[in-house]
Image (cartoon, rainbow, N blue to C red; front, side, top):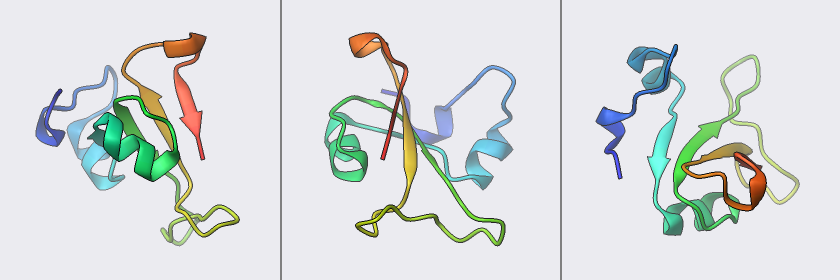
Amino acid sequence: MASNNDIIRPGISKAYLEQNQITHVTEEEATTRCGCPTEGLIIPYYDIERNPIHDPVERPFCRLRKDSGVAGNKYHQT
């Protein structure tokens, strides 16, 4: 697993990843944050004023970009 300082995405700068709080999570963290037990990158979503967007149960909305294409899909969203 890469540490958050080691995240590299083609065409995306480290500064952008840090500024937008895109982080790598373990299976346990992914399960807690978005209900999907797969390692990957958590991509949080914000409104125009940089406030986190929440789902109906007040959990911050995010997407998980899975490290592997488990079950044929690359992303899981809350």
